[in-house]
Image (tube, rainbow, N blue to C red; front, top):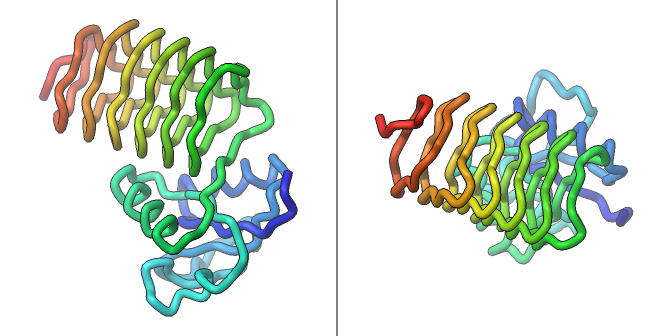
Length: 207
């Protein structure tokens, strides 16, 4: 693991989980970026300001970045801003996660405790693979998606950009889900899903 200092973009809620995971993975997390300094700072990180501010001091620092933003659209936007500034987004992977050797993993991803990712999965950038989710063989997960705690993608599933798969949802083998989709918690998705819809239930139906 590199000793390079790390800036956490987003430091509340999901950001606390990312901070804890990064420290468990021996990452040198020193700073956080947020709209305002937080009254609660459980990991005692130094506040740098808001990364969208032209005067943001982090742009002048030789640091890598990790993403602590839960909202898919905001995380995607901030990630692109960081990259436009020429900064490196790195992955945060909990030591307990199980990643097959033959996967493709992009940048700026968060892989939480007890996640399982199986062979030939193609994982994009800026994604969240939350606690205990399972990504089976040959799945494709595109940029900015969030696979919530306990969700299961069976083999050969495709997930579009910025799509959210809710906690404990199951996606049947071979199903393709479009971009900017919300799948409700506990849903079972058994057929392909178009872009920009919300669905839930067993079997899941578009709202």
